[in-house]
Length: 242
Ligand code: ATP
Image (cartoon, rainbow, N blue to C red; front, side, top):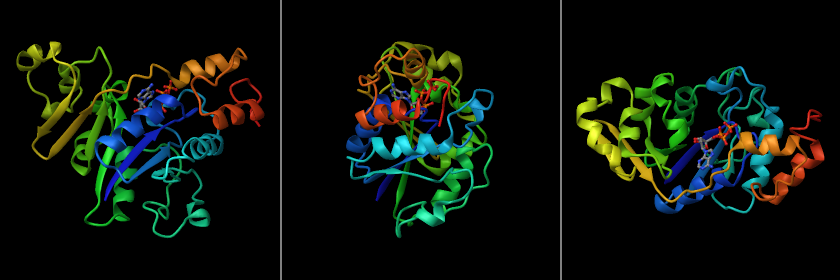
């Protein structure tokens, strides 16, 4: 079975995230997409993050209507997954160490619970992929699963090629002509497959949503109504988290 792994801070989860997951699921026949809120994402250690439990709750609300979308506790800080696990759910019973989460560790733990016949796809937006070479064991992570990189207008094939870890990077002289080519199709390198997913054009970001919430603006445009309601009820992003 094809399974998607979609990690993020999801602070909060918004329509852009859902659009990416829906497009990937339909294009690559993903029977499940695990939405994995990060405890402390390595690149966001300095910025305050809403409590894991709120971010997880919002992911659970936003994914309710999609049969294959699964809110995941893989990176839950204090391992409570055992208490809520349901039998047979990929990754449901895997403990975490807390603290900063590196995708390579989470993916390896998840893979221990999958069947040999399962194929894992790592979902990521191209903006996040631009920093990919700096990730811990980036090369190893590419070897662990297929990647689905959601491209956006304005990004070229050269942007993707230049974001790869150094040993996979083609010399700039070779990739220069790629700058006019849209990021689409598959990039197949030794032991690595990157699928470039087009058609996800939601310009929303969680940063903009938090700013709008802080100003008391309506959020319905960007959020699932249940998530918008949750944000309002808990006063999230308004300096009075409950
Ligand atoms: P922030 O604004 O707080 O940095 P974000 O909106 O980028 O947050 P994250 O939780 O950091 O959301 O992102 C998780 C993943 O979702 C990343 O791979 C990111 O590239 C992707 N993503 C975020 N926003 C969009 C969007 N509008 N369209 C497609 N992918 C997105």
